[in-house]
Length: 564
Ligand SMILES: [Cu+2]
Image (cartoon, rainbow, N blue to C red; front, side, top):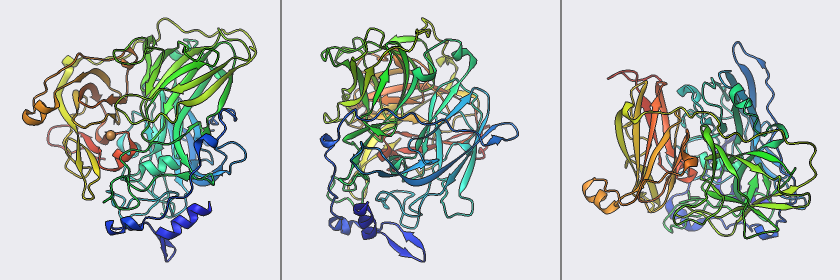
């Protein structure tokens, strides 16, 4: 605590009760405060604490047509690390990090009053050189985005629709119709310029949509359906959250946004390297990667046979259930063989794991292999542990051969095909800056699909690293992922494919996230059925905050501008 307080005092000044956020010119780069002593992650005992399950948020009473909820953002302390380490100051909803889970039913609307009661100064150093984060902007500003929601633009958490705790109206009421496939959604902050810091401080939670059709499948449920929100963090020696603020680029200002953030400590549901007791039976795990930049390639490794891994099935993805369960990752060219599932930031994987071949006392560890072309490190290869205990009764759940038909879009119905490049340039401080279509956030809108039409978008990655792309409003289908010749494209604008189309079957559902590896074109198809202004962006939050986000506008008719 003291480290952080000293640090904030070093960079923030108070005037008339208002805290003026960090203001550093790049001449100040070398005046950067010293990095506090950091916690050695190997000193944190693993698998000590049980996996916390976020509480389900209770409605506050019924509004006219919707279940009505209230969630207040505050700063508080929570024990993220094992006992013996100090509690950590975090931000959360309803005094909890992750926030409480919202349980919704398909076509049953939900209204949430999102209230900001956060302090006036940020828990983490703010880079005031980023667009929307200038020194004259309030350091603490929030707006909630329900990731994966099919919703009107005014309820989508547009990045500039932020509000502060000291505004007269320090809240927003967002209505979610839930008129979409049942799926694992998650809510998180989306304020322009500060999303990475707000989410890192703790502003994230889960939102589940269900329906009778899915209930009738008799998948593992109740105690046997477990959410796993995976996030990486760095801690100070005093147990506080640390977000690196010194860019590897020597000309960068301080504090500075990073090219990517990779933590050294894994939290699952807000607890470092937890364990879960499991019975020898089937479980459904709703895996959500809530990390700022780190992707995971997950395997389940029995401690008794560390060279093997437990087969499992993926049943769903971002936008809901797959047509049928997919035994994931059996053999993929160039990748290690073995059951595994990849989740880049903001991706969800709904998996069914069968522990019935194990006996009480057996231990299975969830491990991370990292993935090629996306940032990762070898320092964190463990996520959590499963400990097999006695069965409490027979397992009557099933893993059906067929789940539910995925609603499909026909490429023949697409009225437009757009090419959107993923580019890298340098900003005025010589930091790498990633762009979409070579345009910045404030540049005029270029993607303007007509209401109730279907379009194909090609994400063309000309940068040296992969990016997880997210489109608001829609769930899309991925049609293909294919390598191309960047040199030819850069000189002529022509796409010459150099590799086969690749799309693993577990990505063949409705999605709102897609990994775009370097040197590939990823083709998606989507139907745009609500007018107004939304955003699409890279879900590396450092990229998103640093211009790799663009508005798009669904327009009602030629020449008319949609209302936000
Ligand atoms: Cu990116």
